[in-house]
Amino acid sequence: MSSSSKRGTEERQVVSFEALLAQLAELRKYIEALQNQLNQIQEELNEIKSSMNALAEFRGLKVEEFLAPADRRGYVLIRASPQHVDRIITHIGLEYYAELTFDKAIEVLSSREREYRGIADELQKELVRAVTHYERLEGIVNSVLAQARQARTQQPKTTSS
Image 1 (cartoon, rainbow, N blue to C red):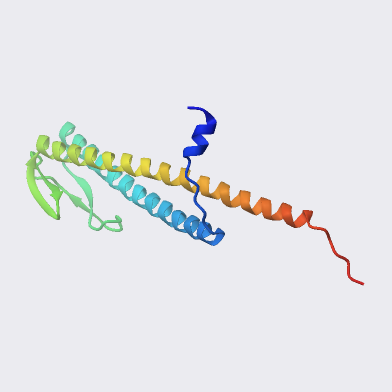
Image 2: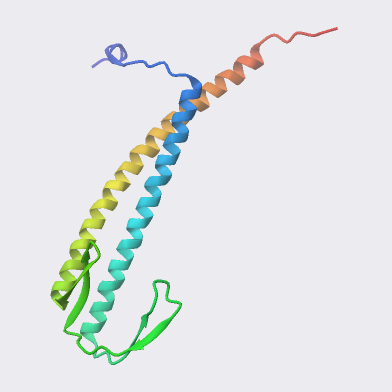
């Protein structure tokens, strides 16, 4: 297709400068929200990997005692001795837990990891699209501003006496 026929099929849209700036601001908020979601998913992936590593250590070693956090941040640790290391209480979703074998617990965690990786991949793709659109709009805004500056400098200056 020649460039002249491409130009003929392009749609031109007239938008006010203020509308462009508003769209840019909304897009920036959207990008920040996507980044926050991606960070949360990455934290979940890190937690899942940490759980899988802990299970691997329990399985491979004869653990007689370990430190278990009594809270989410680890401000308090409790010495614990595993009594039944052949069965693991595992979060299976929707605030439900199940007592599972090692293999089944690993399977559940692996499934959750795959699910979160898929979500992370989709969020990353959407983030790339949003950033690309943002950069394109930002280029338009910068171009308009440069044209306005140039028009001001080319206007004849009037002197008052």
